[in-house]
Image 1 (tube, rainbow, N blue to C red):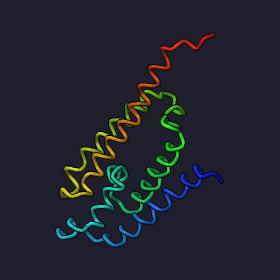
Image 2 (image 1 turned 90 degrees about the vertical axis):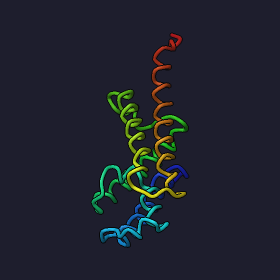
Image 3 (image 1 turned 90 degrees about the horizontal axis):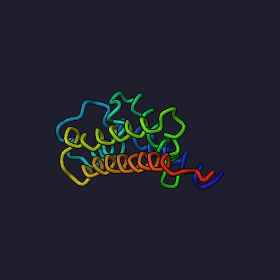
Image 4 (image 1 turned 120 degrees about the vertical axis):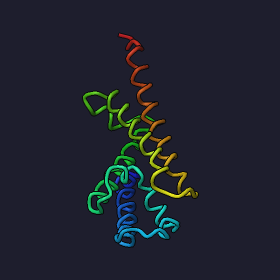
Length: 149
């Protein structure tokens, strides 16, 4: 198994284990003092895209796995998306991913007190927007370049 394949499977498993442990820790409704705890903030910020989609523990763990599996797949793309070209409309998929990234980045304001972990939300947002924005730009650029035949 190549290193990329190992990352593709190890990354989601580690994140699901981490999120599962912290979900068990914070399964009860959070108390106001929990919002100041570093582990609570990291648990939410590291999995910000999944939290934007769901807050139900079992569904959240599925989304955590899905998000980190997609990250592992996209890492293997060497700077270009592996997933969006497989859709019927690559440009629409890139645009929707960029909108999702904006939602993740703006979600910082609603979920977490301003601390170092707060920076992970805009980092997720900028990373998602930048990655899929670059992929969108490449798709437009490649459609204008003649293939030389």
